[in-house]
Length: 423
Image (tube, helix red, strand yellow):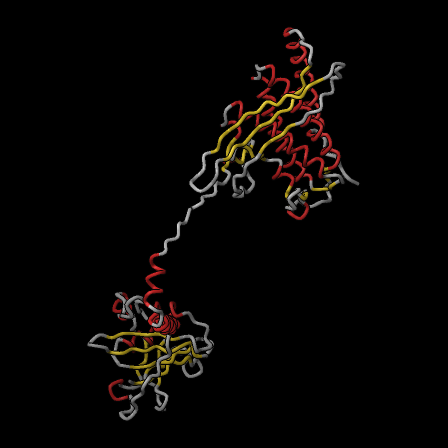
């Protein structure tokens, strides 16, 4: 095998700075305008040769080996041991070598036709020393090293296996282990208005309790940017719009009374948050200045995101469509959950009261290996022992519902219409 150097020598020839030269021959073989021209011209001559090539920084980038094996030239590049910081894939592309086969690609001959502007200093047929046969020491590639290590490990395992008594192997084969696959369900996104009316109402009730808990956690005033405060208000506005729509369709007297409590709960929570969450024009709108609070589980949560949804009936129920939902939806495992509501009735009642529970159960079908779950909506309501005329009760509930609708509307409009400024 012959050897050759492809050097960058602009000091010798500014027009043709790339030089092909044997390391033991004083004169050069040829001069070229580019390394690509020089290497493709020499490769086409068909020599078994190892060529060390430089970069334009005059440092060696790698070695290119061309070798005739069974009447077919194969090519190999090694850039690992060199300081030129060249990629093997770039060199293969430059020298028109297919990385999959190690053979010359179809574009080689086409490009060679364009290599016409160069200077051949010596005849290549007489240029190389006759007594200079070079034996290349190939470095094992990372893949070859890995294959050898795996083969060695495989042999060691076979040797160990051959020493295990036959009766132990047979005993292990006979043992069967029953494995039950447990598939965990995760909550899925749902747009509240795509759900049935009763489910919408139940989700709103659960949301009111969630909002109550959040309002009870935030006890100190938080200053954020006007933009972040508007995002928070937008989430509550979406809930407010839903509550108005549900109120217009409520025909059941029992649901009307529960609706009154839900609206009051929402109103009280929003009123508290409006006093504690304020904005200042001096605060920049970035994640560092968003409003956060620590949930009972210890998780640090963004207020705007928590106000955008409620977990109910194995669903991530949001108050806008999925296309308009701007927050991340995290995969959560479906859990058995019971929602217990307690609403304080402000109407004083002289007669003793009894507590009655109204339960709506939704069975959840799960995969094999997971026990059946049931999610309950438990609403606690107050009922007089003495009977009240249906006509009087109907008008009382209707008027109270109307009054509380006006109350929550006022709270929303007052907060949404005015942004407190902190000085």
